[in-house]
Structure formats: C-alpha cells, structure tokens
Image (cartoon, rainbow, N blue to C red; front, top):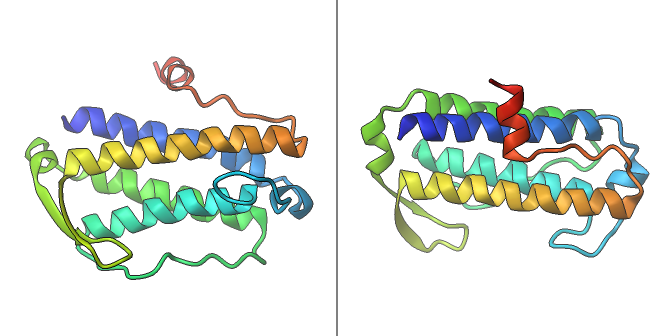
Length: 164
C-alpha cells in the first residue's frame, strides 16, 4: 500500500508543480481576478489547496489546528507557488517515511469546527489527493476564464509517461 500512496504523493507534487510553474509568472490582475467558483480567484483556490494539504499533514503529525492557515495576499505569486510546493513536498516526505502497516492505522483528530473524527490513514490520503485534484480542475476553468493560455496538463497518465 505504501507504494501506491508514495506514487500518489509524487503525482500530487508534480501536478501542483505544473501549476506553480505557471502561476509564478501570472500578474496579480489575473491571479486575483474575481470569478465565480468555489473560491473567488486563482490565488484563493491555490491557497485553499495549499492550506488543506498543510492542515492534513499537521493532523497526521498529531498537531491540532483550530483555524485555517492564513496566507498573506500581498506576497508575490512566486512566493505563493513556493509555499504550495513546499507543503506538497513535506506531505510526500511524510508518506515516504511510513511503512505499509501505517496506512491501516486510525487517526483521531478534530475538524475546524471542533468535531471529533477517527479515520484510517489510507482514507484520509485518498480524500486529500482527490480534494487537491478536484480543485486543480477548477484552476483549469479559472485559467480559461481569466484568459491565461498556459494551462498545464496534469492528467495522471501524462505524469506516468513522463516518469517511466
């Protein structure tokens, strides 16, 4: 099971990096343009993905977070991209250190509303990677609606072919 989740973590990092390469060069007028979606801009969608990965990693490390991590909206797009990739890299490092049996372990944690939950690590990671992929899909739409022509292809098969 470790091999599968290590691969998912590597893919997640790669896919996030494809977007990070593009957003590093996007001007604030594009990245902060308000567009109707789950989140009102490219920056806020990226920050949501970054924050969710950070929150879940902290939960897996036994840290209790009671608020969504804030990101300074005045920071450059390059800083945002770097913070996003750093979090994805930390998540991949964490998964790499685990053994197969760890993926069956139950984790107790509280959500941001204070509700207690217990979930298997494998379920948490499947949720996390699907969550990130869902919002990366929204980024494609946000890019198109903003007139950004450099839309990265982040399909898993593209990753697999590039990493044979």
